[in-house]
Image 1 (cartoon, helix red, strand yellow):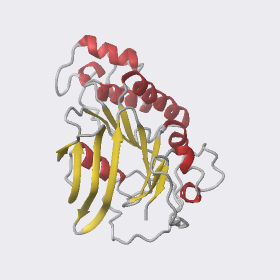
Image 2 (spheres, one colour):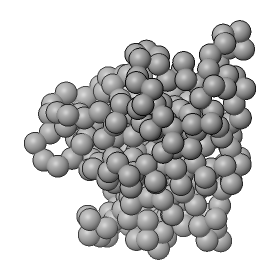
Image 3 (cartoon, helix red, strand yellow):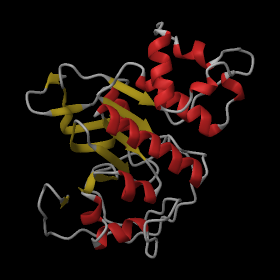
Length: 279
């Protein structure tokens, strides 16, 4: 891993990940800067969670370069938290694991994310939405300059998801941290992101939401007639990859996807600051 000399917090170049000689991620070029909200979308098995695991350092890339800013602090919100009903633990105690945090700092973060009233509750008694906000607050305790979220609203209803993402946006606005998240929710992609990345083993396309949403490739990806309100992800994708990647190693949750294949690429390119197509 190398340190970054430009203004990026985190970047990759030609990053590849393979399992048992099967390619999962191929030639991933990625970067994120302070204050950006970037959303990664893609079908099950496309490598979304694998990419996040490489970025946070829990698995190694097979090849390529990963660079981090020297003062990078990452806060991570997982897809879900496995809890045992046997272990009694309040939210306040949960915030003190693995290292103690001052009560003043805990109160400040909890007020900011609207979970102060949950501090004395048992973790196992929390609703899905409450638990996700608690996980967000815990991730914010170390004052991260990059917040990474792996489908954090999986299992929440649309109202709960909308409220959670408002909390994320408010946290970004208050602290200036960057946010990188995986989501299957189209309304999140369109309303809460500065940049959208479509991943399917490699970067298919990326750009600002208003630019990407006007492209035929985007409409093929998400289906037609959604008008930014589709809560369930629908992927229509048929361009053939020139590499063999395994769809069994990225353990995304099951959704009612439509995998009819209709995604094609055009050779034209656009302004790299607004949106670009990747062959």
